[in-house]
Length: 377
Image (tube, rainbow, N blue to C red; front, side, top):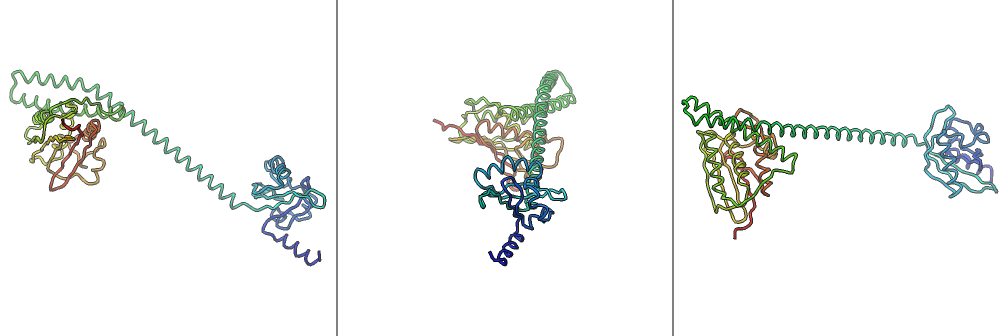
């Protein structure tokens, strides 16, 4: 080869955008371009014929090179994109990617290496690993918080159930005692006090019933119902009559539409009507009537409760049937803790039905429960 061409070829190798090296079968460096030497901080004279390629690797990479890369070179003649940490002359480590091939040259086995600095790639991969580790830690922390919140909620609901159950008996004893006292000779003032006790006790009883139902709905298999053939209108009329005693001075009307027979749990329907009427009395206009309508159609029956007053804010409607949600931001002593509509929804679901609400300033607020029925024969 002419000297000029040989010089150009050597310049091309020395200025290649990668480190190039050639070793014998034992790893002793026979050639190395300037880039390879400069990256590692050596002169060619300090490497060629003086050092083995594997001696330029960190301990872990040297073991991997001898146990994996070299056997692969022997078996398949090449390896590619092997990550290695090479040692500079000053002791610093330099992350690199290595490609190598083994072949015969002038009757001897030689290994040729091309190495590429992988500092940026190494940094990016480390950042990705760190980001993933951080994200996994955040997810694990969020899961722990969620599990803790769930455990607290379950414990709170269990305690609500226990306390409500323990309160039911003394409340019932108080109501029975007040009723017995009312049957004797009492003055007008005493009668007023007894009426107050009975109304307060009735409200407490309904609250306890709602709390127990909340516990059953959240922690059990849902509210239990015992459907039977009942007189829809008579059942609703009985509930309305009882509620009229609870809300003296308020106008409560019952409208009947259609046939009377249906299949449902009478006690649960009475509870449903009671919760809807209580809600209407609490949030409706005091001087306006509350109208309960029971309707029997061929494939369903429905119950609706209508009251006039301020409409329910649009932002509250979507979550209105969740526990502890009220139809108004303002709270007063006449308003419940926000379980009534949740229980209404659960009773409707237990019957395979639905509950909906419409609320406008002009038309008032109407809660409607629709429960499917088998067509009448």
